[in-house]
Image 1 (cartoon, rainbow, N blue to C red):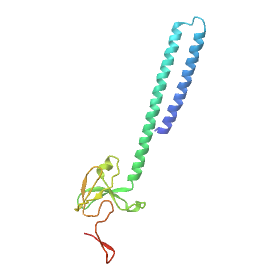
Image 2 (image 1 turned 90 degrees about the vertical axis):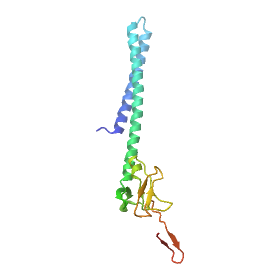
Image 3 (image 1 turned 60 degrees about the horizontal axis):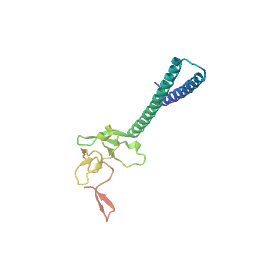
Image 4 (image 1 turned 120 degrees about the vertical axis):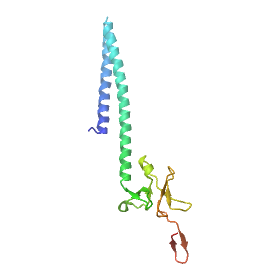
Length: 172
């Protein structure tokens, strides 16, 4: 399998070769134009060669652009795969499945889940707890809602009230 970076290098090398060939064709045209009575057919062929080389050079430049775009897309896919490898598909306790951050791979982030619908589209959207109460999480990006047995599931934000006398949070 050819690496995309190698393909870009090959395309650049080929473009350099085409540039040289174009230069040679131009010199050949100049030499033939300076002699008396060069055959019109030869001049037409040289001009045709020159035009074909220019077209090939344009095609080569387009190929290089395409390969750069493919390389960027592949890099983005690899970065997304690396990021989402930190998550595992988990049941919410009420039949819904979401991607939950693995306990051993938090990297300082609070416990949270991401939307499976957005994940399928290569987006990372952290599910939020229902601000109006109720046991579900919702996605602010696509609007999907996921039933949850845990009212505090989603972003890691805990609902509750502060007991001033104890300094703790009572869960509802």
